Image (cartoon, rainbow, N blue to C red):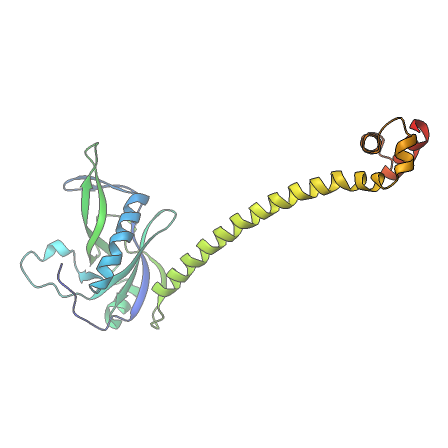
Length: 240
């Protein structure tokens, strides 16, 4: 792939590259799914070092012989709940045309792998053409626009990192809560026993051990709704 020359592409848009689903292609049916998004995102790590993935006016296949002049570049690829999205940077003039809907869609050109059932899965994005006659509906739809040049790709990366940290924190909190629940149960069972064990005279006179009377008092309290202390006092008189 030719390394892109540096150009002033400082207007960023987040756009739909392709919704998940099956889309017709001259070679057969294309299967675009989460695996496609994962593979494209992974390949983007290398392509970003080469300057990004080029964006042209018109479908890339419309220029079989002539020189292709990029009007923008893809600097990020990520998955959404229903498709693949990209962070695209454009020149000021091209971004304005997109925002005015003079150019409404994208036409991705990608490398595909053949699946066992004869269908194809896109796995690597090679270039994108801006067009008003897309092969895939909704491709090019604007998700977010920041025409003043703020770096959306950094925001997307920060958001992804924050989400991952939130997931780890949530998992840690659940583990702590479970441990605290177990500890509270142990403390509850042992507290009354410790209190009763501090009265050896009662324990020696009783027909039952202090721990047994504690358990009986607990059961009676749960059955009758009476305070535990009252149940304990009654059992102390009747059993001793």
